Length: 77
Image 1 (cartoon, one colour):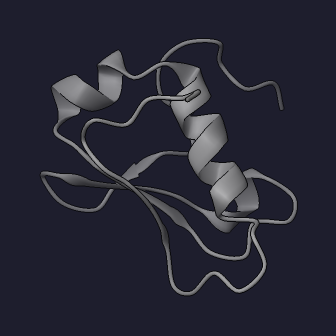
Image 2 (cartoon, one colour):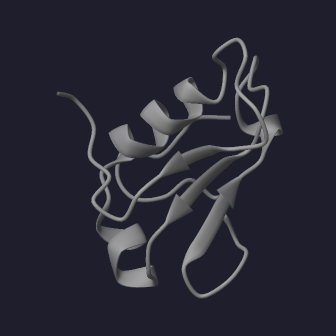
């Protein structure tokens, strides 16, 4: 399945008003779900690179429970 170039992936699920989750089935090698802390407006304004980066973090050895992205999430450095 091709991932969108902008905005959140279709697999993103809303857990609460400010917690969103990308399941481990999203990307091969994800060890934990990726959780993003943001309201709906922020989620919809995030670049697709944010979702790519946080799901990459979810593949790291030794990660426990969740990979977290804060509301100011952005990709790059």
